[in-house]
Amino acid sequence: MTSLQTQPTSERSANIPSAVTAAASRPESVTTTGDKTALTFEDATCELCGRAPTEHLLTTHDMGWRAPGEFSLVRCTHCDLIITTPRPAPASMPRYYADWYSHKTLAEQHDELRKAPYHRYVKWMRLKVLEKTGRLEQGAQVLDVGGGFGAQLEYYMDKRGVNATLLDFDPAVTENAMIRNRATIMSGDLLDADLPENHYDLVTLYETLEHVYQPKATLEAALRVLKPGGRLVVEVPDYGSPFRKLFGRYWFATMVPVHLHHFTKPSLQKVVKAAGFEPLRHVAVYTPFETSASIAVRYCEKRGLMVSDVTEASKVFKPPYKRVPFYLALSIWTGGFDLPWQFWAWLCNRTGVQALVARKPG
Ligand SMILES: [Zn+2]
Image (cartoon, rainbow, N blue to C red; front, side, top):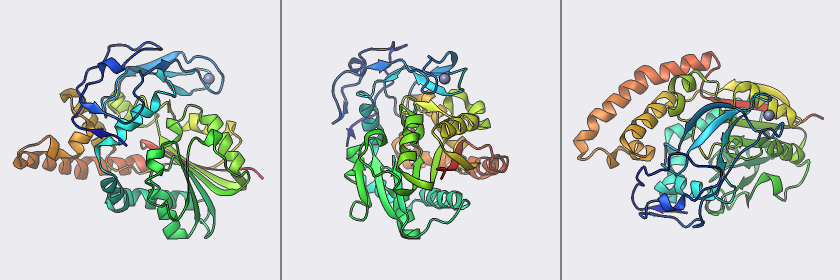
């Protein structure tokens, strides 16, 4: 894990070519336990057709955590995949994650994942989305890819009595998983994980597929480990959402460079089918605070803050009475605008997060 002693400043180079040394621009006040070698970048190609993507959509940078680098979202006009390019080379990516997870202690993160109303809602909602295609049976073998600390698997174990396997590429996360005494915990990439074939009843990738370098190959690996008839759940941001169009580069889920792919509903269907799955159900997920989060991203960008500074308003608004107008404005916006707008978008099946449930043929 990493500790951020102070917030980094917004030092960034204007445009990063395909390979560059960015470590020199990192402020000395950031300490990380990750790889200290220079960051390197690579140009991305479309995994589906092997071509370089050509339709430039926007160029931006990490607005949430102020990590170094400029990145473009470029669409492959043959396949509709939207790809981040240039992107950190795989050896450099762990440093972006090390900084990302840094601003809270393990105990705080576990506590929040278990108890915060928002996280409780997310876990409940995911079970509802899944079970519209059939109940999750007791004893079912469930593999969560990119499952982090295992909060979702813990919920499935508690509510349905499933047998859980957690796989996450970050050993610092899996070593501190909240289910480490109750489940199989593995650290690594699904592409080369030592997992039994035709074994799982359910494979889930919640907010994971947009982070991988090879989404189609990753889904093909999920297909191999699933039993025939087993289910796949993929939950990713929806780049076709009206709120993405409204907020543009400030949309909360743009999140370069850790988001390497940006799926619309049609492009997600395309990748899932190309990997050999039969889609069963594809829905928008009610996502409270979507517009609040995007407004927070814009606010932070304009003022040189990190999003975590604003979500923990005590860091920005000192003394405490200065937080009152902020919380008042946030409450009015959330209650009066964000939640009703999200409800409307959800009814229209057009929120910023999509979930697709698919089935392995056979
Ligand atoms: Zn392509």
